[in-house]
Image (cartoon, rainbow, N blue to C red; front, top):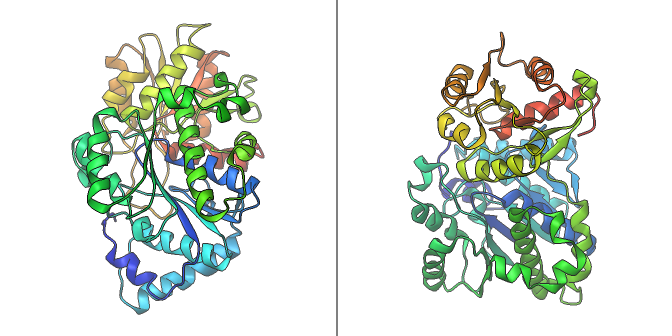
Length: 415
């Protein structure tokens, strides 16, 4: 069930003291990476911090970290039980995401974190995470078309929903590559009296000596460069308000320790298939993130060979043909799979493998049909045999990423 609004989360948390301050991150793409960078830097500064991302990857509780470690299952289940009991007792009727958000915020309070790095789930204005009233800083990442049924059909409508996380007197760091949408953000900032507004754009990121003294630009893909700068600016703004004695530039090396699985992730599947070459695992699932993946694959993986073998799963309701148009070239091979049930999100269903294969065939790719498209291990075996050491990429859904990482864990492979 997806039903946006703040009334239910407000009732769930009405008696909960939330002494921690938030760095609140909304946007279509890049939210998770920005949150990972931010929490890594805060941890390096010995600032007690929690992080809440969604969706989870392997276990329901791995979307919550305390000081860069996944929260203990026992702590999660205790807090979740309390929240669910409150939901039942008070007749709140909260959604799964609202229950999860309340659980995360309860854990932040009980674990006495100083700063909570919070990723908005969907949109911003009516997202459950927007119950935070006095964040240290708001961040808006790249805006793209996604979740149109809830957020609107145009970039402007979606941007207005994301801008709903702005708060009076709170600085907001914005991805300046959203050039056509800056007016939307500026107008919203005036209405709510938010500010200052800090725009991160290609020109400002290249001129930032502090960042590029710590790193080589070539270490990061273009979109990662922007996300890094967004995170750094957010940390700078936050530290001014709570830890002004800490020099932000000293925290930058911690970025190298930041982990964000399922985004341009190189993964060994040798124990499962015998393939010695790594595969690429990426949760790209909307047109904008798929474009980024396509640029990477075409620039880095097609250099030695013209064909790529793909393992693809796409959520039901997504435009599989448009997604494949951006990824697949004639002569590629597509193995279509269907991800399994998503814990806590029963409404999420995989698109039919047949539809993916039909689109792949129409685009001039070889379509590989599996007897059981839900068998991810079989898909890896088949794709490895087809690729013969050539590029092998898994993409199309974060829920596919989850299934793959669970398979790796069962096989004893560190991801």
